[in-house]
Length: 310
Image 1 (cartoon, rainbow, N blue to C red):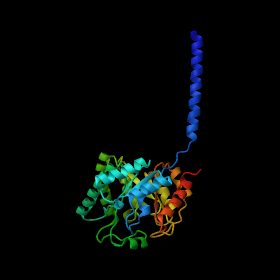
Image 2 (image 1 turned 90 degrees about the horizontal axis):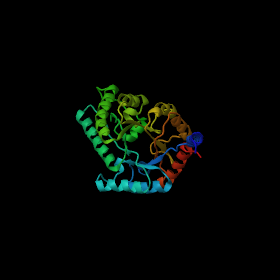
Image 3 (image 1 turned 90 degrees about the vertical axis):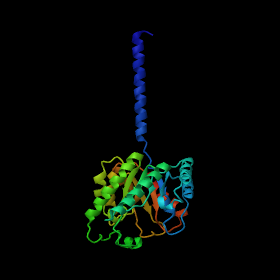
Image 4 (image 1 turned 120 degrees about the vertical axis):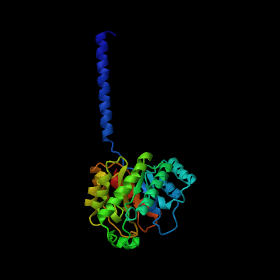
């Protein structure tokens, strides 16, 4: 082949390659990324009955078609390495992710030793997450404790008065300092700390965002948006939190809620999250009184239709 013909054929081949790549890129861009949907083990156990085995939740999740399982720490049988390794292996064999370990702690206390106890607990749970290959932890701010019963707190819509002699500003700073201390370990171990609007100090979106934004520059600070933990109109508050969300917990209430019932418009919520650029896991928390064996499949259908419509 002479030089002129070689140049011509090479140019044609190059044009064909570019055209092919453009077609492929266009086809790929037309593919919509599906939202991964997990189920929290909490959906099967609401603290009122005998613990529902996490192994069984993993089995159910695989059968129903979930993408992952969020583990509630208090639902774990124990914290031994063989047990945690078994959960990790069961999830792997089932093709499921373990996106988050949901834990409890409380940094709202004027007692420095009490706050340190909860810092130590959080650091301990980071190590549990590492052992199970879990990349994120659900983090609580905590609450004043001036309303002793959680049922009564729900009646008060998460609002409780401060301890006498202290203010909300004091509590916000305690949380910022404590979480900042935990983030040192989180970064070392590669685990995101996702602060949730979980009653107490973070009942108000303003309180949650105050804590979050004070720590947002840290690479392992995250935010867990719970669709059911709002007082008043949820949608305007979801809009405020959506740009910062690392993961979303989606409540359903089949059979009536354990503490209250909300009629949430999930197609609307999905649009809010998508417009905010959210691409993470949505984790189901079925908090209704209906048997989870029937309520969880119904809930999955609701979320799939909203987040992954055909």
